[in-house]
Amino acid sequence: QNSPFKNVSANVLFDIDERALQGYMERLSRVASSVDMKCPIDVGGLLNLPGVIRPTSPDEEVAGQVKEMVLTITKEAIEKLKKMRADEGTALEADLKKHCTAIEKDLEKICARSAAVGQGYAKRLKKRVDELLANAELKLDEETLAREVAIFADRSDISEELARLESHLQQLLQSCQERASVSGQAGRRLDFISQEMLREANTIASKASDIEIIRCVVDIKCRIDRIKEQVQNIE
Image (cartoon, rainbow, N blue to C red):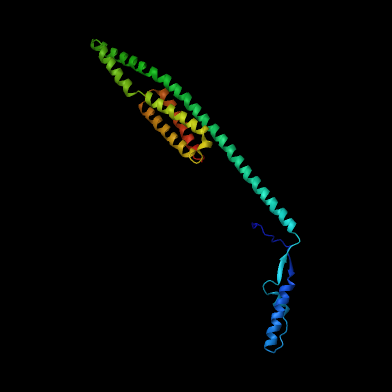
């Protein structure tokens, strides 16, 4: 196997191939004899003929050492690059998990808060209706009030969105842990999951009327945006 390395140092010397030179001289003599003429020998011209001068080097051992050194340095650089990429991957995974943990805490807050939102709305509505009816000396229709509360609860129900968002969150965490076994696909998969998470968060925000829930959703969306930025660096 030919080496891609060539010694081009200033220490390269040259040697004359006497056999090749002798051959050229004999041919020249035969040609001169055949035409019965004297032909002066041009040494410079003979030296320029192919194969007469060959490059030689007393430093072949040095060239071999240089080759080995270059190969060693190249291998070390490749190993360092692999380690650097592995370290970056570990740091990236830790950062993604940090954002996922924060999102999970916000989801817990939203779940706890959403249960009380309907009850709070019912109390506020009843109080407001009581005030209006008191001025008109009318009695509250409990059935009508219950129907209005049910309509509000159905319109603002975010339980399905919360369940899907939690499911996507677990998928994202699982994909982070399995990134080594899905080489070349992890980045696209994580990007898709984060996009679905953002879709659910937007739906929750559009349904929510409670300020605490909205604050949590804003924080979740910020975290998802950071996740989307990070997954662009994953192959």
